[in-house]
Length: 213
Image (tube, rainbow, N blue to C red; front, side):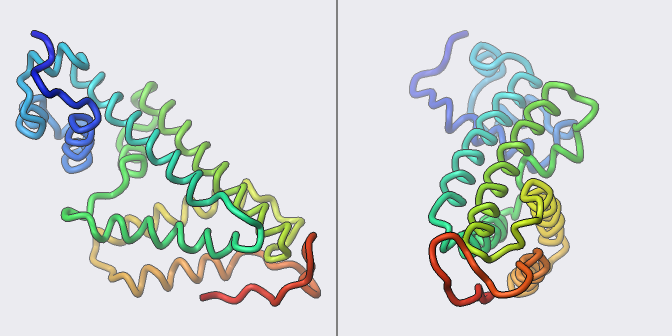
């Protein structure tokens, strides 16, 4: 069976992604996916393949969009690097809080569920992690150039710490922490980043020290 009229791959993958995020890989059936997408099993098989292929397609599409969004949100001038970083972390929390079902990000969920037992999913999740960490490290380097962070600190290590911290914060949404508590945790994480010793100096010109907003 071919694709039904009006088939929109992106919309179908978004519905598939939500179904997997709600019930997990093992807890999601093809009947669940069929009901969520409005496509019969035959159409799903013809368009994507089996359940595992559907999952990988949805995971890949989700990660592709996330990677592009992360890069756009974190790139910018050195002078506003810390503000961008804080806004990025808060926006990530807000997106989960504002989701009708408060679903955790797909990468976080399936890193726990599938990493190590599904080689293809693990490889895609690792690629997504590396991309997110690289975008964060780039923003941290900008903050170092601006004199907001210790130039001796390793940005990739700090970026990894931020990913771990954010994924932990994301899990707290599921147990009911409110936005004010979550933002306070984000601010505490950012306040714990290593500041430069002595007077704050950056490459372009001296500015007032970064203050937490």
